[in-house]
Image (cartoon, rainbow, N blue to C red; front, side, top):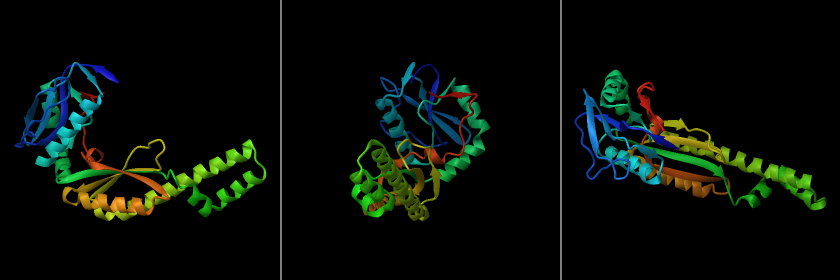
Length: 251
């Protein structure tokens, strides 16, 4: 998507008194210079918005790298890519109007990172499915005895259903296993091909241990599920307040 616009690009909200990461830069080509707009105890990290803003990999990475750099300094209320305010006065008004909500979110996210897990059907699990799923085994024998289009379709559907169900069951098990290690859990939007999409708010100091536990589960249950682990990430899924829609436009 392409947006032709001018204004103020908003990356994040942080507590007043903090600093920017060294050598940090914003989106655009050349990268936009960053600045801070403070209003009482909260401050927005912003830059001029590029006249042509696209979701290029370069800009997406610049946005996320800045958020992760800010998180190394202190709590961060991250904005999604493409959050643009009309001008600095608009940013200040929003900061003032939502001050208490922003402060509560910043307290909630202090020293936290997000780790996302996606559970997909295992790609190389046909042998396990045939061995462990009675219906699949029965339909395969039927296809062998009486080959035909309809029988093959039924077999294919049964295999796909079994793979998805097994992945979903494994996904629920990993959520139960990992939830005690997290401060909060948030279900993500449905993703095509995924049986489960969930994010965990984890203490930064525990993120390596959390990822290791998730990877151990993935290795142990690879006949059931393909587990994709992403993070540490900015805590998008655990933001409890957002800039007002009337004052901020996104791509």
